[in-house]
Amino acid sequence: MNKPVLYLIPAPLGNTEVSAVLPQDHIALVRTLKYFVVEELRTARRYLSAMELSPELIELNVLNEHTPYEAYHGLLDPLRRGYSMGMISEAGLPAVADPGAELVALAHKERYEVVPLVGPSSLMMALMASGLNGQSFVFHGYLPVKAALREKKLRALEKLSAKTQQTQIFIETPYRNHQLFQSLITCCSGETRLTLAINLTLPDAFIRTKTIEEWKLNRPDFEKAYKKKPCVFLILA
Image (cartoon, rainbow, N blue to C red; front, side, top):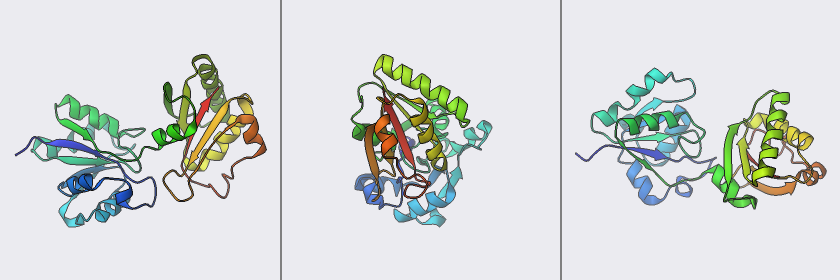
């Protein structure tokens, strides 16, 4: 038997064809797997079914923000028994802004091979399309929920960006995108550039870079047109 591998399998960022997410050779590889660790059962089953994997022939185990760390060890049991397995997050790349990173760390600790497959990354696509600094950048994940703390953090990130000319990247739960946008135009300098990258890879994708002052004059409709749609925010002061 070949040495077992933990494959990191990218997932669609929305309702798109599997062939738009994974190359054909990767799809063929995924079809050889039986064991998967997934963030959400329903969407993972639908995704794997689209790759023609029979639900009764595969085993799915859940790993999300509610999974206690003591349960992580058991998730790698297929590798210990000599079987390769896959990991799938809810959307995009596994282990990026995702609890799967700790499982990958555990696989490395136990000396298993980890192989990332090609697929969409909303963070990298947003950076590519932003026109901001792609040589020096940092991803901060989610900012504080409370407005005062969020605005304090944004001012600190803007100050850091101005000092280093480093692009600052962050995200928000889709239903709070409007609040984050409001904080940005309230507390950032009018000359700071802000990129909004919304619903990437989908037919209604929207990517624009403008100064804060320009955004104040032409605000995106987060309440209707882009309601509850994922957005990547990037700033460069």
